[in-house]
Image (cartoon, rainbow, N blue to C red; front, side, top):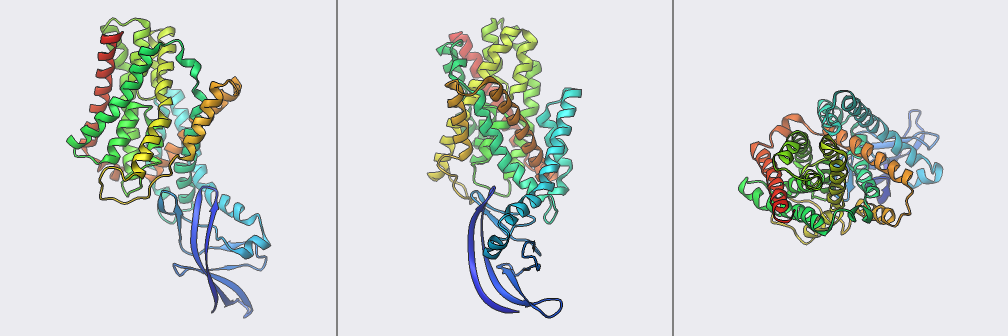
Length: 421
C-alpha cells in the first residue's frame, strides 16, 4: 500500500454529525491491479469495488453526535469520490445501516401496543420491559445497534415535537386562572423539591432533573425529552430506563388509588378533574382515572394534564440554559446542549399553529397518534439499549426519590385545592 494523502471530513447526515480522518492509499487488488483504498484514523482499511458504488467498512468507527461520542455498528464513509460516482449511495447506505435496528424497535412497539390493548397494561411499560429482554441486540458489533441508537434519540425527538399539536390556548378558558396557576405551581414546586430531595437521597443533579421533570410534567414523555438535553454519561441510558419504569408503575397505581382519594375528600367534578390531571404522571392514566369517575371529571382532568404537558417546552429550555451556563457542580463530563433544542422548537411551533387554528382537527389527531407511536418506538429502543442488571444498580435511593416526589406533588395539589378550591 502507498499513502497518497490524508483528509478530515466533517459532514451532517440524517441524525448525525460525523467527523473522521481518512487516509487515501493506493492498494493492490486481487489480481495485482491498483485500486483506491481508504483508511480510517483507527487503522481499518476500506476499499471501493469496481462500480465505485459500494463501500465495505471493516471494523468500527465513531460518530460525533452533538451530545457526545456514541459507538455505532457502521458509519457510512463520507468520501468525495463516492459523491461524484454515486450521489445517492450515502443516503442509501445510511438507511441500510439503520433499518435493522429501527425495525426491531418498531416490532417491539407493536407488540407492546398489542399487550396494552388486550391485557390493559401500560404500553410504555410493556415496550420498556420487552426491550430490556432484547438487550443483546444493542451490543457492540451487532447489525441492529445503529438503528436502535437512532430510534432512541432521533425518533424520540420527533415524538416530543409532535406533542405540540395537542396544545392550544383554547383549552385553558374553561378552567379559570386559579386552577391554571395551581397546576403550573405544582410543576415548578415539584421540580424544585426534587432538586432538594436528591441531595437527601444522595443522587446527582442529573437524576434530580430527570425524575423531578418526569413526575412534575408528563411521566415517560418528559423523562425522554429531558434526557435528550442532559450531558451524556455511562449512566444516562440506565437512569432514563429506570425513571420511565418507575413513573409508569407509579402512574398506574395512582390511576387506581387517586379516584378513591378524590372521593374521600368529597371533591366536586371540577376539583376531582384538577386533582387527577395535576398529579398523575402519564396522559393515558389520567384519562383512565378521570373517566372512571365521570365524563366531566375525565374532560377536566385531560385539559389539566395537557397544561402540564405544555410546560415541557419552557422547562426543557430552562434546564438547557442552566446546563449551558455550567449547571450544578458535577464531576462527569458531557457536552452542553444547544440553546434551544430543535425538537422543542418544533413543539412550540406546532402548539402555536394549533392555538391559531391553522392545524385542521384531523391533522392534529394524526400528529397526536404519530407522537404516541414515535415515543413508543423510542422507549422500546431505550429498553433494548439498557442492561437490566445495570438498571438494577440504580439502587433504592432512586426509588425513594421518585416516590417522594410523587407524594409531594399529590400533597401540594391537595393543599392548593383545600385553600383555593
